[in-house]
Amino acid sequence: MKILIADEHPLVRMVLKRRLQGAFPNLELEEAESVEALLKKSMKQKWDLIISDLFSPAHTGLYILKQIKKRLPFVPVLTFTMFPPEQYAFGAVACGSSGYLTREDLSWELIKAVKKILSGKKYLPLVVSDILEVNYENRLKESKIKISSNWYFQLPKLLAEEKNLPSLRYNFS
Image 1 (cartoon, rainbow, N blue to C red):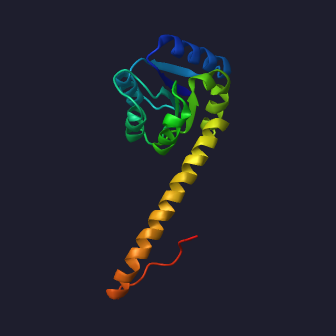
Image 2 (spheres, rainbow, N blue to C red):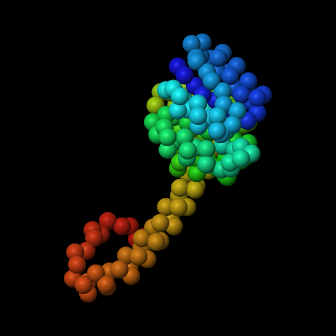
């Protein structure tokens, strides 16, 4: 198994490396200390998993994840950050992250997350799942309002133009 770890802090990389090597004896592991090193090393060989911080001095937010997924769409990425999940969890999942952890979660959930992601599933701690659920429900409500409004205003125009009407599958309640 091959894992690439990316974080600008050597101590964080060392802790991650030791935890992973303890749980996976046949692990081939490489480290990247910057976004540039991560992007360069990610293209050099086939990885089973990339574990990457979402923040660096040069790039903020989801830039790193977007670049990785653009270049390696089928390689799972476990993202982590020091920021609260309310700030980045939804964006990370929307950009293709296979898992999301805060730095606090890394100490006790890292191995569980890696195993689940390597089995082909997603991994989100309960707190992140709850935040995503609320965010999803809010966005769903917003989209229903937009669909209802658009449909309401488009209907007379479509009737006047005698065009085929779209199916009435929307729930307007």
